[in-house]
View: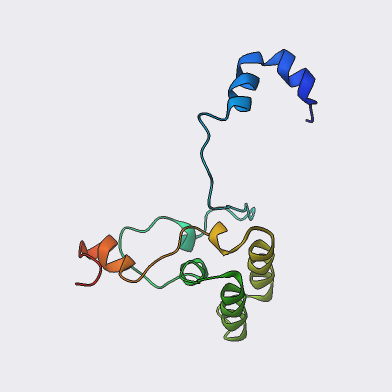
Amino acid sequence: MEIDEETFRKLFPNLYREMMRKRMSLSIDAVRQDTGEGEKEAEKPRDKPGMPTPIDYLRRCENDQEALEVIEYLERRGEITSQQAEKLRKQVKEHGVRSFGSKKEWGYYSTKYLGEKAGD
C-alpha cells in the first residue's frame, strides 16, 4: 500500500511529527534478506562456536572488494552455490559489506565464547 505524505500526515499526525523530528531514530547497520526457506541452521544464534558461515567470513572483511573476493573463493571451493554467491554479491553491491553486520575483529570468538579479553 502506498500513501502520499500529506494523507499520512492527516491520518497519523503524531507519528508524522515524530518522524519529521527524527529524535527517536536508530541507525541500522545490517540487512536481512528473507530467503523464503525459513531459518537455516547457520543463521541461528549460536551458544558455542562452530564452523564459520559465509557471513562470518564476510564480517571479517575490511571493504566491499575484499568481500567480493571472499564470495568468489567460497564459490570456487564449492562451499556455497552459485545462487548463494550471486545473492551475496548483490547484497554487497547494493548495501555494502557492513550490511552483514558489524566487523568481527581479532579475538571476537575468544571474547564471546571464552570470556577472554582480546590480546590475551
